[in-house]
Image (cartoon, rainbow, N blue to C red; front, top):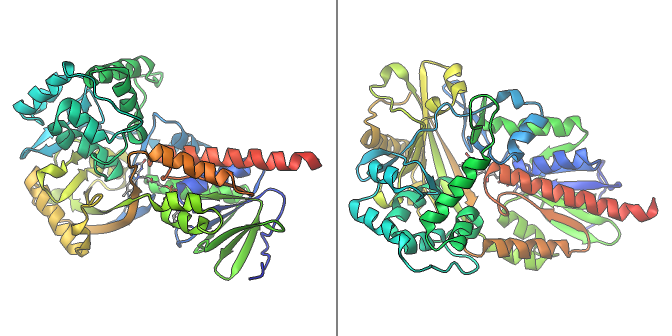
Length: 486
Ligand SMILES: Cc1cc2nc3c(=O)[nH]c(=O)nc-3n(C[C@H](O)[C@H](O)[C@H](O)COP(=O)(O)OP(=O)(O)OC[C@H]3O[C@@H](n4cnc5c(N)ncnc54)[C@H](O)[C@@H]3O)c2cc1C
């Protein structure tokens, strides 16, 4: 195939970013700031990937991710840099619950990903049975449990504190982030602070208390009324962040093509990178690969089979979000708080519900007569319900909401958003896998870096962080390549 040079053709410091999710867009923004010429290729007709702004009954809502960790600075900083810092809003309530053992129970305070440091609030919450509490207490006296180089979160915590704390706390909390299986997810990659605590102390609860003491001592203050918010949303939805970043990319001279999947990627000595998209071929000095693992594996198969094989081994979880709007006047009961998580062990259909109108002040501002909430269905290897049609997913969500919080009203509007392959699963050994992928691509003849949810964390700030790293490494490589001739 001959390379038909496009208007964006090869130039000094031209970087093609593959994938227009938040990671790809953040990488493009950073590359432009560093002086590169940038073309973003997005396969679908919409930018943002798992961030998706939508509308229900005329109210703006998030149909994908809805909140970002603010304790990690990258995502909040990105929002500020692209000019929407004034729309950042913390949740109005952080009070969450667990629907377990046939009741809605307050989420006990004082834990790290469900592992308690303080047993009193946990006992008071009723989340764990008396026998389960007695088993947790054995952690203080049990001999050390080795972590090895990595261990599944569930396996380690069950060995120390018993299965009940895994099944009723760790599993739903971890599920809220990964939609995964605690007995399979890497402790080192997914909850590194717990891994550190497990290595530092014989007792895991003592290790958690150490972490909490350290976190309290170093918690950032907002300068006025105590601790800075842990999470942040955006007025109008987190789903508006990608378009804001894309706007900044375009203003800085970057080109963004949507509906333009990268179909093939090859390095050639004469042209540098050649990226085929449809019937066109772009050339580039460097590539940032910000697509999910399956797509990245396909693109690297020919030129970097070692990385492709590693990427092909990353499993994904699928889920659906059911967003519903109710007329407040129809609601016999609006439960308080931001929502609840559901431990899979309880055998319910939904995995969580977020009371969006309670959680986000901007939703209340948008329409005070409507109450918006959403449920999630499906998780890793537990996706039979995802074969159901939309109306069945709405019906099963309403049935569970009725049982959990006594909600009997019917929604005035509902939307089902399916996230097939939504979240990569960080299996035991994930960090080593990522290191092997990075080493393999760094050894290619042309500059190529990877970023996104597959690598350093699935949360938005982690994706933005990995994008910064990829962009900075590419900029460093391009500068080094140019230096001798200048
Ligand atoms: C339902 C759901 C809820 C979530 N909630 C939260 C939350 O509240 N807070 C949080 O921090 N995180 C949340 N996450 C996780 C977070 O949203 C994602 O991990 C993150 O947005 C992933 O960003 P990304 O850019 O790495 O990948 P993606 O968003 O997957 O973007 C990758 C892009 O690459 C494109 N692409 C694929 N193949 C090609 C190709 N060949 N050529 C060109 N383009 C290609 C895709 O179309 C896609 O747009 C949630 C995830 C899901 C699924």
